[in-house]
Length: 166
Image (cartoon, rainbow, N blue to C red; front, side, top):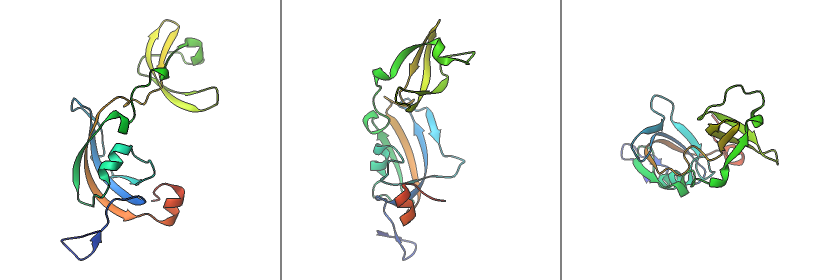
C-alpha cells in the first residue's frame, strides 16, 4: 500500500482479489473509439479472475486509485489472433426461420457438443453464408486510456463467486 498524500489512510494497490473501478476509452490502431465508459458508471471487476483481457489486467497491476495510464495491448494479450478455422461457409438452411440474412448480423450458434458461440455473418453468396466465430476485436491492437477510480479488497463471498457484488 502507498500512503495517500491527502490523508493518513493507505491506498490499496491493484492486485489479485482487488475490486477495481475504472473509467476507460478503447481505441483501435487508427484512433477510432471502439468503446468507452464516458458518461456511465465506471467498469468494476475483480482483478485476477479473467474479468478483463490479460494485457489490460497486467497493465493495471500495482496501480492505485487516481492513477491514469495508457496501455497498448497486442492481440495475443487481448482477444487473440484471428483463427481461420472459425470462419466457415454454411448453407442458408442453417438459418431456418430467418427471412433476411445480411453481412454484419450476429447470431448465437451451437456446435456439435451444444456449446454456444456468437458468430457474425461475414458474407452472403446466394445460399452460401460465411460465418465468423472470431471475437469482433480478434487480431486488433487495442489502445486503452484508463483512469483508476477506486481499489478495495474483495469480500470472501466475491472471491468465492469470482465476481464483484454490488
